[in-house]
Image (spheres, rainbow, N blue to C red):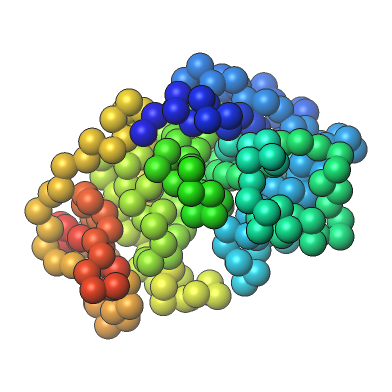
Length: 269
């Protein structure tokens, strides 16, 4: 698993943002030059494809509305990821893009298949993750290349992020990806009450610290307990513990599957 393997497969790194923001980012993270898609009329198809790709990855209930993509992503920050020539997409995936009445697939060749969006918080130092996705689960040849992991890695580098706060679901494989980006990976809020998937969603925080060449070289650590993704009672207990000054760190391997149930190994501190 390496960045070079992804590039050799034919994936091209990109950045989607406003022209006036391009100087704010490292446009060649780890030597991978980001192909720009700015806020011009002739880029409309790419941006619509990004939104469609995000929807395919997350399904309709967590789809990113167009106005969020415009207001938050293009006008305030950037989406960074990989795109792939449409000839390498499966017929089933192409059909989902073709079904979008606003999207003209005939007028462009490369489709965004992964993306990370994050914005700088009001404290001026913390980057807040909005969306990390990839279509790797629909593209078998890409599944083993770790495209979502490297999407987040090059995005963090391009942003220049040092501190990161994000939101994810307990049963989402991305839980392990987020863990690879930092030495310490804490639960900040175990239940997100206003989220559509309230009890299955948590907020995490971390200080960014990773080695691009060894993103998979994570040794398992001892843990205090295993948190089932579906254990509401334990999540409520963690919530009370946080109020009393305790900390709950998600430790490697970050995500454990047992009998089709997802567990997070937690160190109580």
